[in-house]
Length: 160
Image (tube, rainbow, N blue to C red; front, side, top):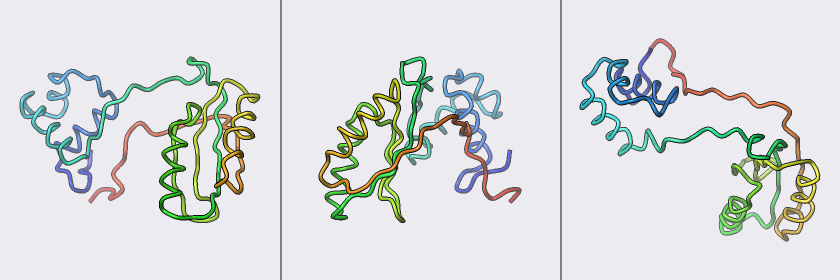
């Protein structure tokens, strides 16, 4: 595997392996990257201190938790100021339907990833929870039919 920018070959391998399986035993991880377990553990600690590794997470199947409808909701807010952006982001993340909040540049100010049990609950979220906020001047939503994502960050530098 090519080296990632700002990481040597061993750190790049560690990051790659942890993205594939964050629960891999230290002994197995060390063997895969070709270092002693103590060295591997020390490197993981340094990657965490540098905030290259920011957490280890469980992947959750949303439909298994009763959230089979996902949508992307684009919102515009006004007036556009840092305090209002900060408050809207904080409040949106506190809503149980919202899985992620993205602050955008361009025509829309926010993108909310929403997961709900059904279309009726999505409608309630949009009409009662989102449009009732005085700073929201416009929104539009798109239901997600399918979702795929990469499990690992790839080296953008190619073979360098």
